[in-house]
Figure 1 (cartoon, each protein chain N blue to C red):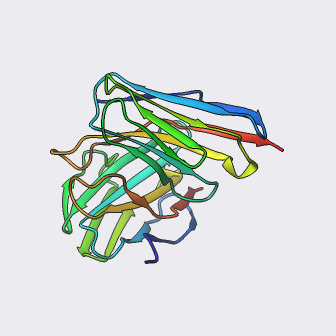
Figure 2 (tube, chains in turn red, orange):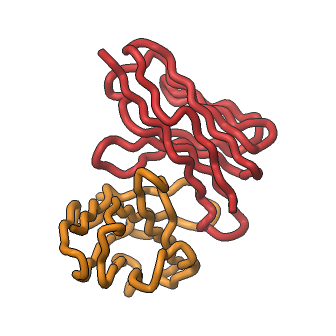
Amino acid sequence: GQQLNQSPQSMFIQEGEDVSMNCTSSSIFNTWLWYKQDPGEGPVLLIALYKAGELTSNGRLTAQFGITRKDSFLNISASIPSDVGIYFCAGQNYGGSQGNLIFGKGTKLSVKP
Amino acid sequence: DAGVIQSPRHEVTEMGQEVTLRCKPISGHDYLFWYRQTMMRGLELLIYFNNNVPIDDSGMPEDRFSAKMPNASFSTLKIQPSEPRDSAVYFCASIIRQGAFGYTFGSGTRLTVV
């Protein structure tokens, strides 16, 4: 089945630094999504990307849908302590089974004040 | 809207006991999903429903797991008998319609089987 490779698995950064994480797939997706999971909570949608090549920003977050439709990256600029959590990429296909939201294993972000 | 509501938040049970997890999706959402999250395997889709009907249960690990959705506002995931390897966080998520993007997740139920 489809699988997503998300990297890095974890990051330890200093407050104020920029962060970059990415996701690759062996097959294409129609939509790429990025979620953040705070400790003890469920994942919350941060950004959704609908078109190959699309670059979308949400505050300090920027994400891009790769031109091949097999990859995506998420950047966080000027990190702050509340950015701590696990970030998941997810690929989604529509027009078929709604079960096709495939998640990466996550990138655990730690921010040192 | 209160979002997707799951209960209990934490459950500790002994091996062999029956466990029932509950979920209330967002009102008006037609699709409901059950996921399991572990360190080793990440987020795994167990089963999903459309208009209260189970559509794909291929992710259910074995016959000890069962899920029901008796109406549009309530779903249960049952494990009987429970085993220590079932220990995980179980999430419920819902979405409004086919073609919409992204799911809304509940806060999860952390299950520990001892």
